[in-house]
Length: 376
Image (cartoon, rainbow, N blue to C red; front, side, top):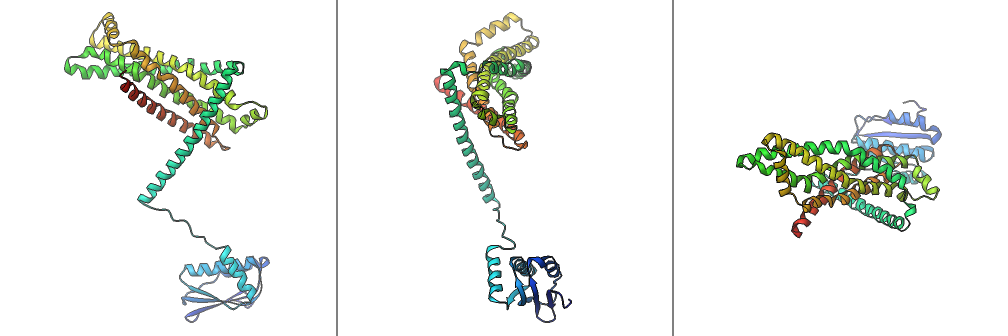
Protein backbone atom coordinates (compact mmCIF):
# COMPACT_ATOMS: atom_id res chain seq x y z
CA UNK A 1 0.00 0.00 0.00
CA UNK A 2 1.07 3.61 -0.54
CA UNK A 3 2.54 5.76 2.18
CA UNK A 4 -0.57 7.94 2.24
CA UNK A 5 -2.84 4.98 2.93
CA UNK A 6 -4.44 4.96 6.39
CA UNK A 7 -3.86 1.18 6.52
CA UNK A 8 -0.47 -0.51 6.16
CA UNK A 9 -0.25 -4.31 6.11
CA UNK A 10 2.84 -6.51 6.56
CA UNK A 11 2.05 -10.21 6.03
CA UNK A 12 5.48 -11.90 5.88
CA UNK A 13 5.86 -13.79 9.13
CA UNK A 14 3.67 -15.75 11.51
CA UNK A 15 1.96 -12.57 12.70
CA UNK A 16 0.54 -10.01 10.26
CA UNK A 17 1.13 -6.40 11.21
CA UNK A 18 -1.70 -3.98 10.37
CA UNK A 19 -0.88 -0.37 11.17
CA UNK A 20 -3.62 2.24 11.29
CA UNK A 21 -2.52 5.86 10.81
CA UNK A 22 -4.04 9.28 10.32
CA UNK A 23 -7.46 10.63 11.18
CA UNK A 24 -10.16 8.00 11.70
CA UNK A 25 -13.22 10.20 11.69
CA UNK A 26 -16.55 10.32 9.92
CA UNK A 27 -15.18 12.79 7.38
CA UNK A 28 -12.74 10.13 6.16
CA UNK A 29 -15.13 7.17 6.54
CA UNK A 30 -15.46 6.49 2.80
CA UNK A 31 -11.70 6.28 2.17
CA UNK A 32 -11.16 4.32 5.39
CA UNK A 33 -13.83 1.79 4.44
CA UNK A 34 -12.29 1.19 1.00
CA UNK A 35 -8.84 0.78 2.53
CA UNK A 36 -10.06 -1.70 5.13
CA UNK A 37 -11.88 -3.77 2.50
CA UNK A 38 -8.56 -4.33 0.71
CA UNK A 39 -6.96 -5.98 3.76
CA UNK A 40 -6.06 -9.61 3.03
CA UNK A 41 -4.22 -11.87 5.48
CA UNK A 42 -3.00 -14.93 3.56
CA UNK A 43 -0.07 -16.49 5.39
CA UNK A 44 -0.47 -15.58 9.03
CA UNK A 45 -3.13 -16.95 11.33
CA UNK A 46 -2.59 -14.12 13.80
CA UNK A 47 -2.74 -10.37 13.28
CA UNK A 48 -2.17 -7.24 15.34
CA UNK A 49 -3.94 -3.96 14.75
CA UNK A 50 -1.47 -1.25 15.77
CA UNK A 51 -3.27 1.89 16.89
CA UNK A 52 -0.30 4.13 17.77
CA UNK A 53 -0.52 5.98 14.45
CA UNK A 54 -4.11 7.12 14.94
CA UNK A 55 -4.17 10.91 15.33
CA UNK A 56 -7.95 11.41 15.68
CA UNK A 57 -10.77 8.97 16.34
CA UNK A 58 -14.54 9.24 16.60
CA UNK A 59 -17.31 6.64 16.86
CA UNK A 60 -17.47 6.13 13.08
CA UNK A 61 -13.77 5.29 12.90
CA UNK A 62 -13.96 3.11 16.00
CA UNK A 63 -16.87 1.19 14.49
CA UNK A 64 -14.86 0.59 11.26
CA UNK A 65 -11.94 -0.76 13.29
CA UNK A 66 -14.15 -3.05 15.31
CA UNK A 67 -15.91 -4.29 12.15
CA UNK A 68 -12.56 -5.11 10.53
CA UNK A 69 -11.42 -7.04 13.59
CA UNK A 70 -14.65 -9.04 13.58
CA UNK A 71 -14.33 -9.74 9.83
CA UNK A 72 -10.80 -11.10 10.21
CA UNK A 73 -11.84 -13.18 13.21
CA UNK A 74 -14.64 -14.61 11.09
CA UNK A 75 -12.13 -16.11 8.63
CA UNK A 76 -10.02 -17.70 11.38
CA UNK A 77 -7.47 -14.95 12.11
CA UNK A 78 -6.65 -14.29 15.76
CA UNK A 79 -6.79 -10.47 16.00
CA UNK A 80 -5.33 -8.37 18.78
CA UNK A 81 -5.41 -4.60 19.20
CA UNK A 82 -2.14 -2.99 20.42
CA UNK A 83 -1.06 0.52 21.27
CA UNK A 84 -3.18 3.60 21.09
CA UNK A 85 -3.95 6.30 23.59
CA UNK A 86 -6.30 5.84 26.52
CA UNK A 87 -9.00 7.77 24.69
CA UNK A 88 -8.70 5.46 21.66
CA UNK A 89 -8.89 2.36 23.85
CA UNK A 90 -11.90 3.69 25.77
CA UNK A 91 -13.82 4.52 22.59
CA UNK A 92 -13.12 1.10 21.06
CA UNK A 93 -14.21 -0.59 24.29
CA UNK A 94 -17.44 1.41 24.29
CA UNK A 95 -18.15 0.44 20.68
CA UNK A 96 -17.51 -3.23 21.45
CA UNK A 97 -19.75 -3.14 24.50
CA UNK A 98 -22.70 -1.10 23.24
CA UNK A 99 -22.69 -1.51 19.46
CA UNK A 100 -21.70 -5.04 18.47
CA UNK A 101 -21.05 -5.41 14.78
CA UNK A 102 -23.03 -8.60 14.32
CA UNK A 103 -25.45 -9.47 17.11
CA UNK A 104 -26.05 -13.12 17.59
CA UNK A 105 -29.20 -14.36 15.94
CA UNK A 106 -31.54 -16.13 18.32
CA UNK A 107 -31.51 -19.82 17.68
CA UNK A 108 -34.81 -21.53 17.01
CA UNK A 109 -35.45 -24.86 18.65
CA UNK A 110 -35.86 -27.82 16.41
CA UNK A 111 -37.81 -31.06 16.41
CA UNK A 112 -40.24 -31.56 19.26
CA UNK A 113 -39.17 -28.33 20.95
CA UNK A 114 -40.24 -26.33 17.90
CA UNK A 115 -43.54 -28.21 17.78
CA UNK A 116 -44.22 -27.49 21.46
CA UNK A 117 -43.29 -23.84 20.94
CA UNK A 118 -45.76 -23.56 18.06
CA UNK A 119 -48.51 -25.28 20.04
CA UNK A 120 -47.88 -22.97 22.98
CA UNK A 121 -47.97 -19.89 20.75
CA UNK A 122 -51.25 -20.96 19.15
CA UNK A 123 -52.76 -21.77 22.56
CA UNK A 124 -51.86 -18.36 23.98
CA UNK A 125 -53.15 -16.64 20.83
CA UNK A 126 -56.47 -18.49 20.98
CA UNK A 127 -56.85 -17.76 24.70
CA UNK A 128 -56.25 -14.04 24.15
CA UNK A 129 -58.60 -14.05 21.14
CA UNK A 130 -61.31 -15.79 23.18
CA UNK A 131 -60.91 -13.26 25.98
CA UNK A 132 -61.26 -10.36 23.54
CA UNK A 133 -64.31 -11.97 21.94
CA UNK A 134 -65.97 -12.40 25.34
CA UNK A 135 -65.46 -8.69 25.93
CA UNK A 136 -67.04 -7.94 22.56
CA UNK A 137 -69.93 -10.29 23.40
CA UNK A 138 -70.53 -8.54 26.71
CA UNK A 139 -70.46 -5.12 25.05
CA UNK A 140 -72.95 -6.31 22.41
CA UNK A 141 -75.30 -7.72 25.06
CA UNK A 142 -75.12 -4.51 27.07
CA UNK A 143 -75.89 -2.42 23.97
CA UNK A 144 -78.71 -4.79 23.01
CA UNK A 145 -80.27 -4.45 26.46
CA UNK A 146 -80.03 -0.68 26.27
CA UNK A 147 -81.72 -0.65 22.85
CA UNK A 148 -84.42 -3.04 24.13
CA UNK A 149 -85.25 -0.61 26.92
CA UNK A 150 -85.35 2.21 24.38
CA UNK A 151 -86.79 0.67 21.16
CA UNK A 152 -86.67 3.94 19.25
CA UNK A 153 -82.88 3.58 19.11
CA UNK A 154 -83.17 0.38 17.06
CA UNK A 155 -82.37 0.98 13.37
CA UNK A 156 -85.31 -0.71 11.71
CA UNK A 157 -84.39 0.35 8.16
CA UNK A 158 -80.95 -1.22 8.47
CA UNK A 159 -82.55 -4.33 9.98
CA UNK A 160 -84.90 -4.74 6.98
CA UNK A 161 -82.03 -4.22 4.56
CA UNK A 162 -79.92 -6.93 6.18
CA UNK A 163 -82.94 -9.22 6.53
CA UNK A 164 -83.32 -9.10 2.77
CA UNK A 165 -79.59 -9.64 2.20
CA UNK A 166 -79.13 -12.59 4.57
CA UNK A 167 -82.61 -14.09 4.24
CA UNK A 168 -84.46 -13.50 0.99
CA UNK A 169 -81.35 -13.43 -1.19
CA UNK A 170 -80.09 -16.67 0.36
CA UNK A 171 -83.21 -18.69 -0.51
CA UNK A 172 -82.01 -19.95 -3.93
CA UNK A 173 -78.67 -21.38 -2.75
CA UNK A 174 -80.13 -22.79 0.48
CA UNK A 175 -83.04 -24.41 -1.39
CA UNK A 176 -80.84 -25.92 -4.09
CA UNK A 177 -78.28 -27.31 -1.62
CA UNK A 178 -80.98 -28.76 0.64
CA UNK A 179 -82.81 -30.38 -2.27
CA UNK A 180 -79.61 -32.05 -3.49
CA UNK A 181 -78.64 -33.19 0.01
CA UNK A 182 -82.08 -34.78 0.36
CA UNK A 183 -81.53 -36.60 -2.93
CA UNK A 184 -78.11 -37.85 -1.81
CA UNK A 185 -79.42 -39.05 1.57
CA UNK A 186 -82.31 -40.88 -0.07
CA UNK A 187 -80.06 -42.50 -2.69
CA UNK A 188 -77.52 -43.72 -0.13
CA UNK A 189 -80.25 -44.86 2.27
CA UNK A 190 -82.00 -46.91 -0.41
CA UNK A 191 -78.72 -48.48 -1.47
CA UNK A 192 -77.92 -49.63 2.07
CA UNK A 193 -81.38 -50.53 3.35
CA UNK A 194 -82.12 -52.54 0.22
CA UNK A 195 -79.60 -55.11 1.48
CA UNK A 196 -82.01 -55.84 4.35
CA UNK A 197 -85.24 -55.44 2.41
CA UNK A 198 -86.10 -52.31 4.40
CA UNK A 199 -86.14 -49.68 1.65
CA UNK A 200 -89.33 -48.14 3.02
CA UNK A 201 -87.42 -46.95 6.10
CA UNK A 202 -85.48 -44.59 3.86
CA UNK A 203 -88.36 -42.17 4.46
CA UNK A 204 -87.61 -42.26 8.20
CA UNK A 205 -83.90 -41.84 7.56
CA UNK A 206 -84.29 -38.81 5.33
CA UNK A 207 -86.99 -37.14 7.43
CA UNK A 208 -85.27 -37.49 10.81
CA UNK A 209 -81.80 -36.62 9.44
CA UNK A 210 -82.99 -33.52 7.63
CA UNK A 211 -85.24 -32.20 10.37
CA UNK A 212 -82.98 -32.89 13.37
CA UNK A 213 -79.48 -32.28 12.02
CA UNK A 214 -78.77 -31.87 8.33
CA UNK A 215 -81.18 -29.03 7.54
CA UNK A 216 -80.10 -26.66 10.29
CA UNK A 217 -76.41 -27.61 10.13
CA UNK A 218 -76.02 -27.19 6.37
CA UNK A 219 -78.02 -23.96 6.38
CA UNK A 220 -75.85 -22.53 9.15
CA UNK A 221 -72.68 -23.48 7.26
CA UNK A 222 -73.96 -21.85 4.07
CA UNK A 223 -74.97 -18.70 5.95
CA UNK A 224 -71.59 -18.58 7.73
CA UNK A 225 -69.78 -18.68 4.40
CA UNK A 226 -72.16 -16.25 2.74
CA UNK A 227 -73.35 -13.76 5.34
CA UNK A 228 -70.75 -14.08 8.11
CA UNK A 229 -67.96 -13.33 5.66
CA UNK A 230 -69.96 -10.40 4.27
CA UNK A 231 -70.31 -8.90 7.77
CA UNK A 232 -66.53 -9.11 8.30
CA UNK A 233 -65.71 -7.63 4.91
CA UNK A 234 -68.22 -4.78 5.24
CA UNK A 235 -67.19 -3.70 8.73
CA UNK A 236 -63.51 -4.25 7.96
CA UNK A 237 -63.71 -2.02 4.87
CA UNK A 238 -65.49 0.64 6.90
CA UNK A 239 -62.68 0.51 9.44
CA UNK A 240 -60.05 0.85 6.70
CA UNK A 241 -61.82 3.96 5.43
CA UNK A 242 -62.01 5.32 9.00
CA UNK A 243 -65.80 5.42 8.79
CA UNK A 244 -66.10 3.80 12.22
CA UNK A 245 -63.87 6.52 13.70
CA UNK A 246 -66.14 9.08 12.05
CA UNK A 247 -69.16 7.44 13.68
CA UNK A 248 -67.57 7.75 17.11
CA UNK A 249 -66.68 11.38 16.38
CA UNK A 250 -70.36 12.01 15.60
CA UNK A 251 -71.41 10.42 18.89
CA UNK A 252 -72.76 7.20 17.31
CA UNK A 253 -72.19 3.79 18.85
CA UNK A 254 -70.72 1.39 16.21
CA UNK A 255 -72.15 -1.61 18.07
CA UNK A 256 -75.62 -0.10 17.96
CA UNK A 257 -75.33 1.01 14.33
CA UNK A 258 -73.47 -1.94 12.79
CA UNK A 259 -73.76 -5.02 14.99
CA UNK A 260 -77.31 -5.07 16.37
CA UNK A 261 -79.18 -4.75 13.02
CA UNK A 262 -77.04 -7.48 11.47
CA UNK A 263 -77.37 -9.83 14.43
CA UNK A 264 -81.12 -9.28 14.72
CA UNK A 265 -81.63 -9.81 10.99
CA UNK A 266 -79.70 -13.08 11.04
CA UNK A 267 -81.46 -14.35 14.17
CA UNK A 268 -84.80 -13.78 12.46
CA UNK A 269 -83.74 -15.02 9.03
CA UNK A 270 -81.93 -18.26 9.92
CA UNK A 271 -84.95 -20.09 11.45
CA UNK A 272 -86.96 -19.21 8.34
CA UNK A 273 -84.13 -20.44 6.12
CA UNK A 274 -83.92 -23.65 8.14
CA UNK A 275 -87.66 -24.22 7.72
CA UNK A 276 -87.29 -23.68 3.96
CA UNK A 277 -84.27 -26.00 3.89
CA UNK A 278 -86.22 -28.71 5.71
CA UNK A 279 -89.04 -28.53 3.16
CA UNK A 280 -86.62 -28.65 0.22
CA UNK A 281 -84.62 -31.50 1.77
CA UNK A 282 -87.75 -33.58 2.33
CA UNK A 283 -88.91 -32.74 -1.19
CA UNK A 284 -85.60 -33.83 -2.73
CA UNK A 285 -85.53 -37.09 -0.78
CA UNK A 286 -89.24 -37.73 -1.45
CA UNK A 287 -88.87 -37.27 -5.21
CA UNK A 288 -86.07 -39.84 -5.38
CA UNK A 289 -87.89 -42.27 -3.09
CA UNK A 290 -91.09 -42.06 -5.14
CA UNK A 291 -89.32 -42.72 -8.43
CA UNK A 292 -86.77 -45.26 -7.18
CA UNK A 293 -89.10 -47.33 -4.99
CA UNK A 294 -92.15 -46.76 -7.16
CA UNK A 295 -94.15 -45.53 -4.17
CA UNK A 296 -97.31 -43.52 -4.41
CA UNK A 297 -97.34 -40.00 -3.01
CA UNK A 298 -100.01 -40.94 -0.49
CA UNK A 299 -97.87 -43.80 0.84
CA UNK A 300 -94.90 -41.48 1.16
CA UNK A 301 -96.92 -38.89 3.06
CA UNK A 302 -98.42 -41.55 5.33
CA UNK A 303 -94.99 -42.95 6.16
CA UNK A 304 -93.63 -39.46 6.70
CA UNK A 305 -96.42 -38.67 9.17
CA UNK A 306 -95.70 -41.86 11.08
CA UNK A 307 -91.96 -41.21 11.39
CA UNK A 308 -91.91 -37.48 12.09
CA UNK A 309 -93.27 -35.81 15.21
CA UNK A 310 -93.48 -32.19 16.23
CA UNK A 311 -90.60 -32.77 18.60
CA UNK A 312 -88.39 -33.88 15.70
CA UNK A 313 -89.11 -30.62 13.89
CA UNK A 314 -88.49 -28.37 16.89
CA UNK A 315 -85.23 -30.09 17.84
CA UNK A 316 -83.74 -28.71 14.64
CA UNK A 317 -85.46 -25.35 14.79
CA UNK A 318 -84.36 -24.52 18.34
CA UNK A 319 -80.73 -24.57 17.26
CA UNK A 320 -81.18 -21.97 14.53
CA UNK A 321 -81.26 -18.77 16.66
CA UNK A 322 -78.19 -19.90 18.61
CA UNK A 323 -76.23 -20.61 15.44
CA UNK A 324 -77.38 -17.29 13.96
CA UNK A 325 -76.17 -15.30 16.97
CA UNK A 326 -72.79 -17.04 16.87
CA UNK A 327 -72.30 -16.42 13.15
CA UNK A 328 -73.35 -12.76 13.35
CA UNK A 329 -71.23 -11.91 16.38
CA UNK A 330 -68.12 -13.66 15.06
CA UNK A 331 -68.49 -11.99 11.67
CA UNK A 332 -68.86 -8.52 13.21
CA UNK A 333 -66.09 -9.15 15.77
CA UNK A 334 -63.55 -10.08 13.11
CA UNK A 335 -64.57 -7.03 11.09
CA UNK A 336 -63.72 -4.74 14.01
CA UNK A 337 -60.31 -6.41 14.30
CA UNK A 338 -59.20 -5.29 10.82
CA UNK A 339 -56.06 -3.14 10.96
CA UNK A 340 -54.81 -0.46 8.60
CA UNK A 341 -53.68 -2.82 5.82
CA UNK A 342 -56.03 -4.15 3.16
CA UNK A 343 -54.60 -7.67 3.49
CA UNK A 344 -56.09 -8.01 6.96
CA UNK A 345 -59.59 -7.81 5.46
CA UNK A 346 -59.13 -11.01 3.48
CA UNK A 347 -57.26 -12.75 6.29
CA UNK A 348 -59.89 -11.96 8.92
CA UNK A 349 -62.74 -12.76 6.55
CA UNK A 350 -61.29 -16.23 6.11
CA UNK A 351 -60.81 -16.56 9.87
CA UNK A 352 -64.42 -15.47 10.42
CA UNK A 353 -65.77 -18.23 8.16
CA UNK A 354 -63.52 -20.90 9.67
CA UNK A 355 -64.33 -19.96 13.27
CA UNK A 356 -68.06 -19.70 12.57
CA UNK A 357 -68.25 -23.13 10.93
CA UNK A 358 -66.10 -24.69 13.64
CA UNK A 359 -68.18 -23.26 16.49
CA UNK A 360 -71.44 -24.16 14.76
CA UNK A 361 -70.35 -27.80 14.52
CA UNK A 362 -69.14 -27.78 18.14
CA UNK A 363 -72.44 -26.26 19.29
CA UNK A 364 -74.37 -28.84 17.27
CA UNK A 365 -72.43 -31.63 18.97
CA UNK A 366 -73.18 -30.10 22.40
CA UNK A 367 -76.87 -29.88 21.51
CA UNK A 368 -76.84 -33.56 20.53
CA UNK A 369 -75.24 -34.53 23.85
CA UNK A 370 -77.72 -32.38 25.78
CA UNK A 371 -80.75 -33.80 23.96
CA UNK A 372 -79.45 -37.31 24.53
CA UNK A 373 -79.06 -36.67 28.25
CA UNK A 374 -82.57 -35.23 28.38
CA UNK A 375 -83.95 -38.19 26.46
CA UNK A 376 -85.25 -36.02 23.63
